[in-house]
Image (cartoon, rainbow, N blue to C red; front, side):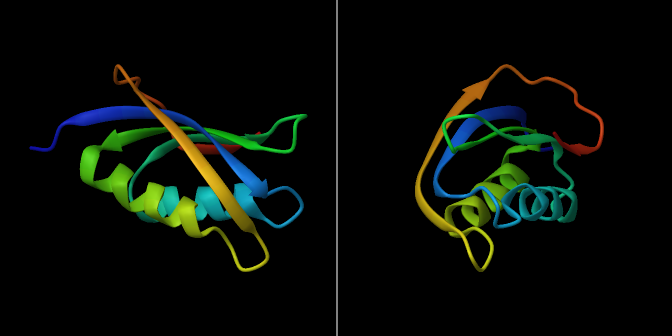
Length: 91
């Protein structure tokens, strides 16, 4: 069985107004990862993801690319103690 983990992070670039949060939700649900994503006032997207380590890696790789009209300059991620989250919310 895979180790469960929680990631918290921020995506910097042109990531608001380009469907980035919905893209994050789509990628997470496809990888069986739960969590949330929200726009924050400084123009970044903040996210929290919980799931199996290899599934989290899949989602993080996708976040480095982003949806078609996004420009991802940076993804900052920290690993936290596992938190059980239900579903995926776009906040």
